[in-house]
Length: 195
Image 1 (cartoon, rainbow, N blue to C red):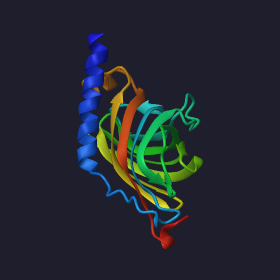
Image 2: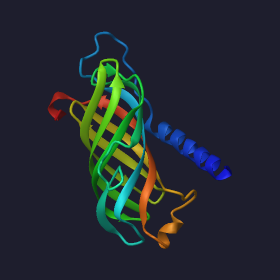
Image 3: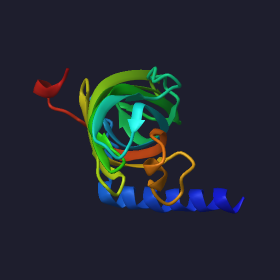
Image 4: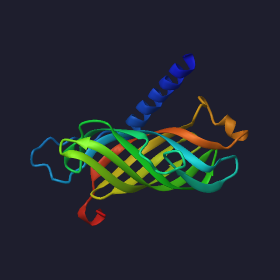
């Protein structure tokens, strides 16, 4: 029980730090809001799987959500604001599948396709896009994403599943799964950037 409370508390502190680093958008409440406007602070909490797994030696591989790295939307997505011109009304799901390089216990770079499904005042939206991310020795780093009509900018923090304080177990066995949280802001992109 103490272990569970310690993990929850540590993750809460990290989430607060990520929120502070990202900042928050100025929400627009006008009825003249553009139909496709996106302006939302979002967090995604998920478990990712890696193959062949991170070790002390740099390498490349594949990663994603869902057992077998299927990209299934097994993560939880929570937003406050609007996505594609519609106010988000509740939590949704999130998933991704991609590849990593220069990856080891102390950092990596990655690129992936993502999808999410989230309820809004205008109905359930299913959205796909691509992201790039990197992680440093402190297990934290930037995330940039693009989807039709919007861009995302944020930070993420990862922890090896079952390891509370460090990646020390990585010296003894490959890290093949992590728990992670991403916090950032979706904003409308200009017409030329829309895919």
